Structures are given as C-alpha cells and as structure tokens.
Image 1: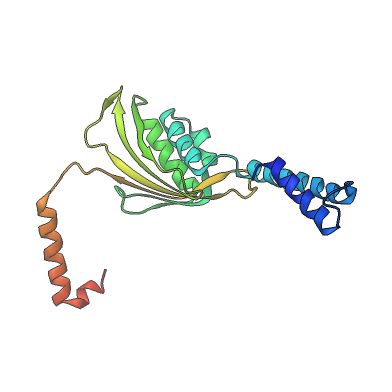
Image 2 (image 1 turned 90 degrees about the vertical axis):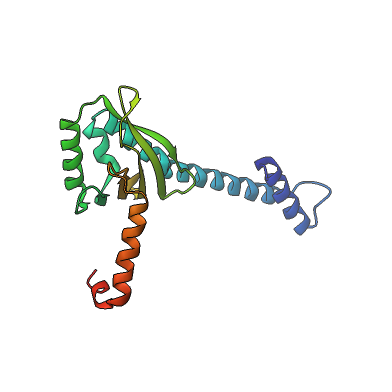
Length: 202
C-alpha cells in the first residue's frame, strides 16, 4: 500500500475507534500515525544502509578486482574465516591470509591480458551466489577456461557490508573422457557394491 494511502487508512481507523469518523479530526490519532510513519521510514533507511551492496554486487566486485590485479580491493571482500575451494588443488585455502596469498601469486604471475568474463550470475539470494564464467585473452576466448563458481556470503563483523565466507571453483577439464567417464563410474560403483568395506574407506 502506498505511504499516503497507508497514513489515510491509519487515520480513518483511529477516528472510527474514537467515534469521530465524520466531523473534526482527533489530533491524537494523526500524531500517532505520523510518528509510526517516521519510525517506519527511519527503520527502512537503516536497513538499506546496513545491507549496502547485494551479494551479487560483492561477487562482481571480487571478479573486477581480480581482473584489475588489485589485491587491495579484493582483500576486504573476503571474510577472515573464509574457506575457498579451487578443485584444481588437492586442499582448500582456509582463512583470509591463505586466500589472499593465493590470489596474490595469481596476480603476480598471470598476465593481466587474461581476464575473467561473467556469463551469468544469480542475484535473487541475499547470501548465496552462483556464477558461470570463462577466461578471455585480449578479448578472445581462452581454451579450456569455462567454469562455474559458488559463493556464500555473510555480513561483516561491523555489519556494514557482506563478505565472501565460502567459495568453490569448478573449471573445465582439458582432458574430456566423454562416455569413458560413465564407464569408470559404473566400474567403481560395481566394486563398492560388492566390497562395502572399500566404500567405508572413502
């Protein structure tokens, strides 16, 4: 309901309760309505200020900072307790210091002509973002560089903005086994079905 209609409705209801629907206004009712309206507006403004950028905005800034090789811009977007999984590596990077170290090495060794390009990004969830992307070399698609990522975000300690607390990258493999992958999966599951003790070792 628009704010003006809301105020009129509140005033009318209040007047009706006091037997004053037609006739002179009851000042107490209008003061109460105005006070509630001001309180609602202040609360909404505070919430907007606290939320700041959306989760998708933060992830876009993350990719923009990486593309500019601007480590100082990337660091504040990473939560102190963040866990980052790049499935090319055997172990995740844990904590902001490790993650910034990884991206610092990336920025220091990979040409800035190689850029991330976002193909699609989810924007509905306030705490989780999915991204599909690819790499380009001077505006041209780079081979075997398509990927997808998932990010989970939380409010920072001072509740001024959202930060990435978890990330996972899945990158297109250079070797593509095709139907052979299904054969391998069927073979492994067949072994697990017949030797359950092996499955418990996973």
